[in-house]
Amino acid sequence: MGNIAEATHRAAWPDFALYRPHPLQATLSAWLRETQALTEALLLPLEDARLAVPQIRIVNPPLWEFGHIGWFQEFWLHRGGSFDVPSMLAGADKLYDSARVAHDTRWSLDLPGMDATRRYVRTVFERSLEKLDRGPLTDELAYFAQLAILHQDMHNEAFCYMWQTLGSPLSLPAAGSSRSVSGGRDGDIEFAARTQVLGARPGSGFVFDNEKWAHEVELRAYAIARHAVTNAQYRAFVEDAGYRRREFWSDAGRQMLDELSIAAPRYWRRDGDSWSVRRFDQWLPLVPDEPVMHVSFHEAEAYCRWAGRRLPSEAEWECAAVSDPGRMLCKVWEWTSSRFAPYPGFSADPYQEYSAPWFVEDHRVLRGGSFATPARLIRNTWRNFYLPHRADLFCGFRTCVL
Image 1 (cartoon, one colour):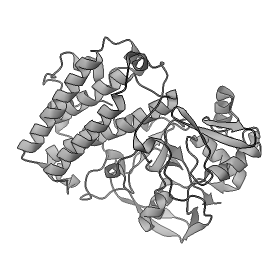
Image 2 (cartoon, one colour; image 1 turned 60 degrees about the vertical axis):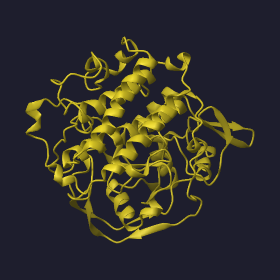
Image 3 (cartoon, one colour; image 1 turned 45 degrees about the horizontal axis):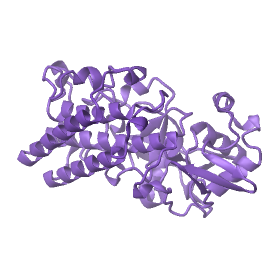
């Protein structure tokens, strides 16, 4: 992640009072310590061999990503989003600004070694704590402190995706399973036709620009599953030759199947009459009542066609979440049918590259959060977004009645 915020862009920055109430200074400091400790724990066991990850589109070199986390925090909290203010690390802008450093070039950069990168990130972190402790906690400082912390939270989750993709060990307590709320019970929740408010309201705390602002949408009557699709339910689709029956798949879905040559979710393996699933570096028995995880939008869509169901729109998902927030959190991100697009009157926030560049591609919206998502990030209005073939994230889905 990166940004293009020169002084001329400050005039377009929002009124940061819109993002009140903000956490207390002590809370922000505690969050910063927590996310930094997790980053260091995720990277602590890295040896040189694991720093050299393959050059694929869905991962970053870990050493680059670690430095980028520190750079992003420094850029917003200590440099005011201005390239005119020098970095604490000479040449950092040319190394770590993801808006200007193309993904494929990150493997060939002359990056500082791990020890030097740790010192840089640690220096930024300690000065950030000093800045928060010194205060005063203005609306602007609170906004950018939360931006930096939540950005680091998201990269921590992305590190977990990376280790899953690469089949690498992860020793964190949350790594073993999705720790699902029971997904085995059937049934739908019915909603009458209504006018639904979609998006965040000013004065509801920190939000990202793609959540702004609340607006009304008309919903027809619908019924949405009480729980996400489980491994057992999805296994029935797989064992009914769902991946070989082309009628269930879109053209893009068929292309994905041809490229991957898969007949089941990409981390599943059949062992006689039973199935196993890979969680990081371990093969574990498939737990029937856990929500299915690591399935792409294309796979979710194909399952729905097979089951005679459909994916919910993000407005339908948010309506259900407002009605019963606890029921909609099942420890996996959930695909919706909605394409990632700006809300009416969208305007980019200071970190302009967070949303706007991705509206032009076919990203699909996911809602909720996963077992690896910190609670401070999860809210009913938060919109995650990925390309429809991605399944490396901790994602599943629930369905609606046609």
